[in-house]
Image 1 (cartoon, rainbow, N blue to C red):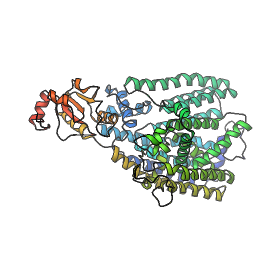
Image 2: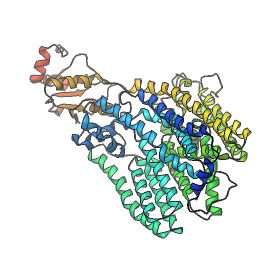
Image 3: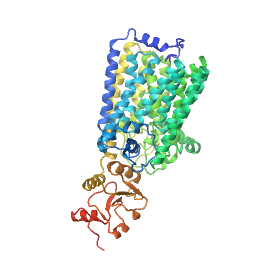
Image 4: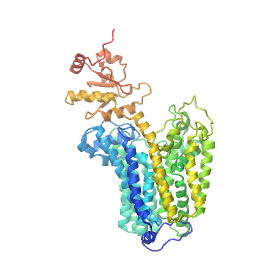
Length: 621
């Protein structure tokens, strides 16, 4: 079945209708589209490289370092220091594992892993473009649309981090393509391919479990068309999908990191005040809308029209219904995760990204962006565009007048959590809860202008498209040219956010460098313990543990629950340790990271460093 973007179109009965649609779209196609396909891929690659270039060291102590430590373990390098965090699934770590066969240098390994992320992002263009052809676009047009999706900040910003996002979206694109192929010809082999793709998708991240559930339900509904394909797919999907989910949690437990992803989801949805849930829904919807220049709303409207057609006209639960089910799943997951008063109001560490969190939604909403843009290029009616404009204007109005005045616009921002709005990072104010003017309605010039400035491009683009109506060939070419420029400007502007975060959270801890020097001087035979209960100042000792464990290489740092019982030669902990001092332990002079210091226990190492003048003097009694 060809997925038609026009609400007035009819479904084709040809078993391979997308081929005819693509051939029809290609006839009379100007050379600009063919050249545009090449240019758009090169542009996407360039923009991802621009972001990746600034990623010098891990800045995500949990998401990045945990996955890197998993990859090191999977490469055969032995047990790492137990990583701390909510738990992460291993598929991306499997991809990164071979890096450690060629280097043990953490800095080199990180840069190579960033490069793998760029490759994964660009490879995604292929399956995404093949899926887009089902809307009725030619191959060059589909490549342009897919490349533009991958060029938007919601996708490019993620390349600056060694997280699972790139692989997750790549696996999702392949899964959707497999679903479309299965729907076109429901055979047993195609059902098996779809099942395997969905299982691989599950292994990329724990939140992909909701996508697995959607795929399983859709396969079950496939029995209406072909019970053989449905049964074959379920026989493969259910066991290996469960295995993918189970093994992900098991790896976290085996390595001592634990697993707590999604624990608060149900409690938040059932226990939070409706106003809290509504704020999260509006904030996340706004982030998706303005970050995609309104295209996600166009895609949403088109998706709803196509779902209605599948259910009402064709009496079928087709691939668009699968996308809708996936969207519903990630919306429940994302809204449920952040709908709590602590995250929005009560936490001592106030975060703006908690109000706008987009990372969980981004993979599925990217499909809507692709669908919306493809529908516009193919020729979308003014009625659909006007509907999208009205919805966007209403959302912007509610956000600017109701949500923004009470939000901590000055709060902490992690670019990977709200990547779509990072082009406007420079408009965020510098303030505190005490100095901020609460209740300030955004204007073009006041301190809360971020919300209004970020909203304007989406409104202007949708207004222009609505005014233009159905685009002809030239109109489509002009549109993609404009979007290429906007995507480029948006990604380049986002480097201010990614570079700032790298400077703030990245870097080499000097304490790890000192330990590595000592290890090199002593042939790697020293033992190192990390004091788990040291909490200096505002430092998060979980962050410190992960960071030091990654950079202290190749030595494995052990974790001590009570440094007074440690048998290690070096103990990393707070600068005040009366019990250690009483035993004769002394700190290395002038070396500190995150409030942690290196204590040298009595023995030959202490005598050697003392003779070299590298230790703090003994305090007078």
